[in-house]
Amino acid sequence: MSFDSPFPQVHVPTTSVYDYLFGDLDESDADRIALFDAKTGTETSYRDMISKIDAFAGALAERGIGVGDVVALLAPNSSAFAIAFHGILRSGATATTVNALFTAKDIAKQLTDSQAKMLVTVSVLLPQAAEAAAAVGLDDAALAVLDGPGVGADGHPNADDLLGPALPAPEVTFDPAEHLAVLPYSSGTTGNPKGVMLTHRNLTANVAQIRPLQGMQSDDRILAVLPFFHIYGMTVLLNAAMHARAQLVIMPSFDLTEFLRNIAERKCTYAFIAPPVAVALAKHPLIEEFDLSSLRGIMSGAAPLDEDLGRAVAERLGCALVQGYGMSELSPVSHVSPFDGGQEMVGTVAPLSSCGWTVPNATSKIIDPETGNEINPPATGLSDTGELWFKGPNVMAGYLNNEKATRETIDDDGFLHTGDLARVDSTGCVYIVDRLKELIKYKGYQVPPAELEAVLLSHPAIADAAVIGVHDADSGEEIPKAFVVKQNSDRDDLDAAAVMEFVAGQVAPYKKVRQVEFIDAIPKSASGKILRKDLRR
Image 1 (tube, rainbow, N blue to C red):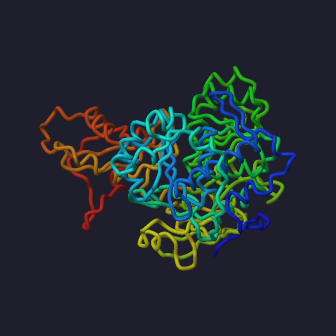
Image 2: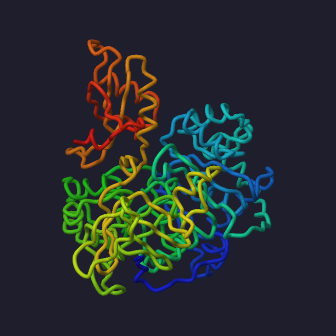
Image 3: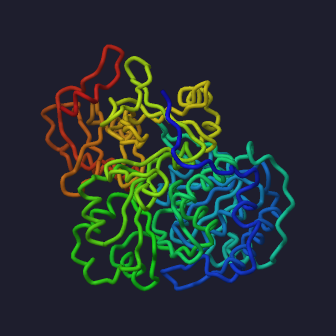
């Protein structure tokens, strides 16, 4: 049987993201600090941020970009990213956020698939951005460099060129339930990255679903180290924190010392992290050098967090630590524990090993992958293991130009099949067990084995290859490991270091192969499918 959320129903907005987040800004909140750039010390109030968002939208409209168009955004975290992102949505266009670690080839692939008419980036990423833009035929005027010298110097518009004229935001009309707000790319349950079509309603619904559970208020200061281009940071930070009128303390990348200093100096109250950060918080001696007493809660997501590790962090920092679960296709949050563990709303506390309960206005079920039968929540203890399915207003509209993958992921009843194996307890609290899918998650990023296998097979000295995720004892991370069959078994100039170097030269840093084992043959089924379970033995 399916199990509903134990949380009270919420009102699902019927407006655009911009109108939902900023349309009712109270004058008393207008001069609150919305964005603080930790690297530069620059503060931006809600009033100034919204003014710049409108001006950015006006600049896009002047360039003929609006409803039906796609704009790509390639940048690390900054106030400029937040303004550009919401400016794109305000213009009626769709934002496709690009991983800041992508190579030029990766960027070009996303630009082509999304049919982006413009690419917005920053100077540090200009080399790969320019190469990708040239490869897909975007001219200089269609490649904006926010911190660049400007259109008069190199042909690329910068922030001053876009915001300086302060053009009014256009009047746009669209159906928030149908119109695409963002187009992040995800490998989904398997395979190569696909454009995830998320409507304005998907995004506003997910903010409405999680806001009562997070409990963020206008006097909170939220450490924003999660990348905004990732759906986790996009929804929890760029959207939910802004809806709460909280302050985002923005870090462009993770550095432990700066992470701790920002919490201490800006008196941050909440932090949203991925498991690798938890390892440092539990073990690094630097923790003792900073006053972290302002911190009330930490939420970990993007990958499962070990229960013992979570408990060590909570005890060391003296604050609540909870987990959440989601995926790009779910906008992304589908399961979460409130920062009190669930005591007030559910009447019990979710174990740290769980990812919490189904978010409001949604339903989950667990399905035996072998029989297709539903697995019922038990009277006591934990249920058997099955695939987690989810249904709610935050479920994506589908994969861009890929009806087959959409049908394989969302069934006729509207349930999205997550590809993750889970168990459930008597309260409906969910525990992620393992991935039914073959996707590797490294530092919260998705690494499709098929992509790495294709790179490996392009090496003339490699006859066959397979890639799986394995646990690295030193980091606690899942890392990509390659099993390689040499063309010539006697060849000794192809060693593990050479294989890793070959792959590293062709993929984004987080996709690199980090272990290599040479074997005589890749185990495969009669149909030719790699038997990854045999490689894990």
